[in-house]
Image (tube, rainbow, N blue to C red; front, top):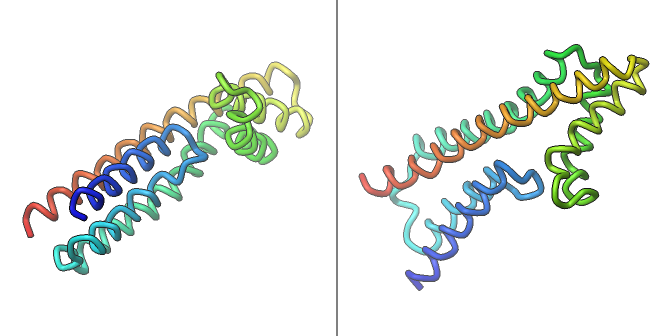
Length: 161
């Protein structure tokens, strides 16, 4: 059972970290679930108030930052609310509609179309589309850093207890 427990924990960590890049995967929630798997297979005694408080705070920051940083890229380049919505839709559906490049092209196209719907000229809409890509890359970096911090904190915490 020990081996099965660690396989599930590591698998959830991998899925979680992959979720930082591929938005369809559960990301931070998979990492958070790995903590429960550890508790169920081994013990919750290593975790206490501070562990759960810190990890929960990181998850909340991840959810807020994911949207805020992505929207920041669009807004930084003069994007409207419609382009933020379009970028988000493109991020979700792009990988399915354009399998090889949808993760990158989806937000650009979505922000571009959203900005055209808002009444902007094509040149500005293209600029906003590339701003959405900047926001996506920035958001991805933030997610990777915070999710790696969650995993490292987990190993430090169980190592100390």
